[in-house]
Image (tube, rainbow, N blue to C red):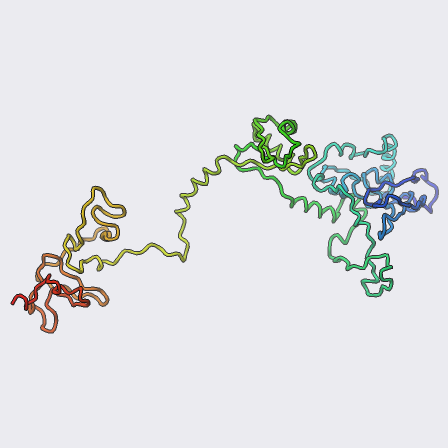
Length: 451
């Protein structure tokens, strides 16, 4: 059964009578000359409900008065401050510290078991030096974790000692002005998880909103991901300076595995190559954002893969097989079949002009034809187009298509042969331009010229 100050003297020898509190640097404040008020058996501990000596003080100018909340026995069991209940070594909540060190210290919650557990812990504390932590935290200083090193607070945070917000100012009724010892600021959102904090949840490390916020911040910190190429066993070490050399790097990285070579460059960086991939991964995990040699924090990164440039060259031809981007101009289509006829009665097979044959096929077309004048490809199963026999009248071309000239060797028909008088002679197409008139240069003789 929990005892109180006004109860009988049962188990009163366990009441705490201390000379000085167990506090962190933040709760003490920045003032080296501090005055404390001491009250013997002033209040009950909020954890074990036993009376203890209460200390009260002001940590600095324009700060609120602070006092101890738990007894020194509960403070030593968890190695926390008697006021803020944060870890004395790292300045973190108990939930974050226990999660980083993987501790499972389940304290009893009932009154009888809590009293029995507290008496046993007092005996253990009495047999120790009184400085080092006891119980499950006895060896925690020798096994620091990555989470503690990244989230630990190394400097005091005096902003935590500010006064509370003036409730009269929030309602618009404060008449003290600048003399008001409370803060005239807008309060935080009541729906904010940080607005609902419990001292017992902080001590037992359960449902602590501050701890949840810190653990979420740690999960979002950048991490060094190993490359996919398993042949990479080299680490890049930067920011060496003049005090860190090959000897210091070899002495540190030798603990993770066998080292093949260490190359120190002039740009204050070095490349440490291991013989195995496992040793390189272990060294990268242990040294990333944690390696400090001769007072300099070194940058750790993975080396680049040697086969990465070659892979980029091999992947370059594969890009040509991608689908074309819509909206870009495509290749020009083949000219229509009507444009392949000879419109000016030039000599050569099929109405095409004769070219000088070369020793080899020209680029882009068959042998003897330039690329822009090559004949269109013939579809499979199609018959070659033959010239009409002599005396056969060609059908009129469709609208918008130039007329077809007879091939060389077919004599044009004389005027009046199977042709109406109001139409030009058969074999002579209508002239649209003077350059298309075959009688202009004397290529075809007219009846007037023959008579």
